[in-house]
Length: 253
Image (cartoon, rainbow, N blue to C red; front, side, top):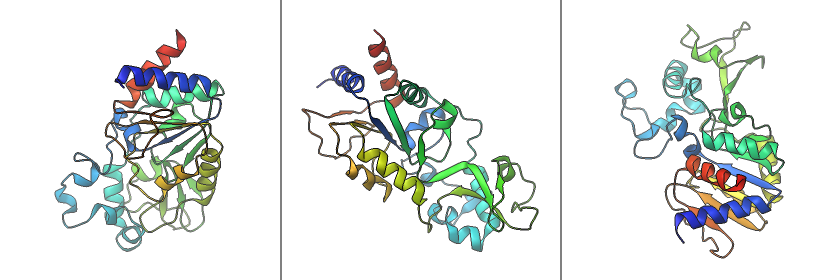
């Protein structure tokens, strides 16, 4: 099946569905200028002399935060400041589908908050968000600027505690409320759209196993070995933003 035919099929699936859930990964936000982690040009494969000898997974771990907080926050500020990035066509279309009452939820592995900036309301951020911070001692909440614009190498609350991001670091458990919400949404969907993820990050990728609906659609630049049923499912290996733009145009004609 050619790409145009697949886009027509996806349009028909979206048009006939009323309980859509979107499950997305880093590829959704790369079109907003935010690098992914594991591709050849991703964050983990970029050589940085300032962090020579450190594994990227360690730099974003609970161990690093606790043992070498100065190193943790230097890396975090340099690599994860997405405040200047804006939602792209994919984020905006998903928010539009939610307003129409067709999209029930977004389940995202991303931590950039772009779905909310686009207007989505029911978003399950299973890895947390750089948009939220809190004091590790008293729990006081802080905005992103409290870390990214802090003059202190280790940002601290007025109580003396360390202000840390509400992001799931390596060595930490996922937020149970976000996980439960994601699983509940996926299990109740009639169409599951998987976008911008190779489904290699666990346990997040395992959540699609709860889907019991009619159709699955995959939009990812690289093929995903999911074993889709070509009679009822579709996989499009193209830009997710441009794919959604084409779908939107078809559904408006």
